[in-house]
Length: 123
Image (cartoon, rainbow, N blue to C red; front, side, top):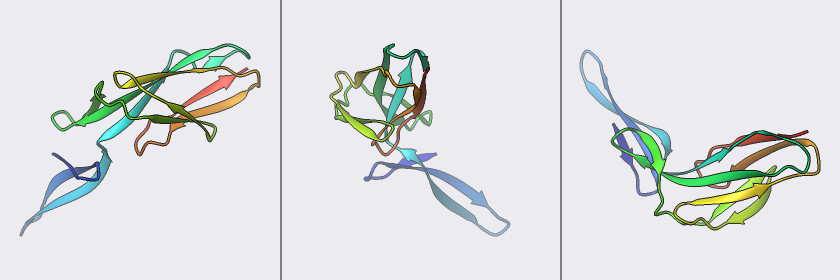
């Protein structure tokens, strides 16, 4: 079972039984809101463009998973190797076009409390 606190933290709630008592144990599981990040390909040629999709998701108490939340259009701050880019979602999602003329590895994440992370390699 899960519980969502006012601060957005999602707790996993479990019963632990011993011979003499039953205890309720609550532990941090995730956060209510999450940014999912997807991209079609993770290896790019220099100068090639990739569309990176950022989607707001909300934790679903029924199945214990995050589901797309098209009603959340809160700004998303994307991070590319610690450099920040502001995005304004529509219908809960935003697209960032990424390309680089510099070969290397680029980590894509956000400043949200709960976020996916992907790694792109430019060769």
